[in-house]
Image 1: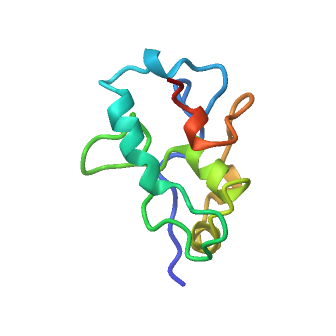
Image 2: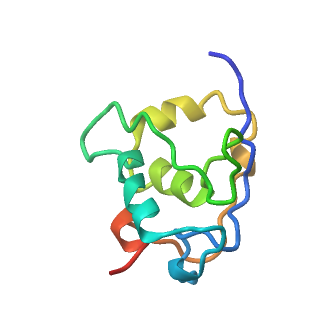
Length: 113
């Protein structure tokens, strides 16, 4: 398995997975519609394949996307994304992943109605 590194290992201050962040205050043109389109990145419970898509950090530049660290922690933990867990086994800097504060447990909670 080829080794690789995450481009970002620290959760950003405006990550929608953080409980202390109002997703409607996220800069850089972040909208509810854009967020809802990210539901395809969430692993279905019981599906051993996980999701084949990753959620990019909203601070990413097009063509130079970085994993959303809040999404990453959710999918590696309670999200139970088996495919992602297997992929992370070859990640050289996975030990450096850090989130800040309490996190949402479910995708639907990250952007309230």
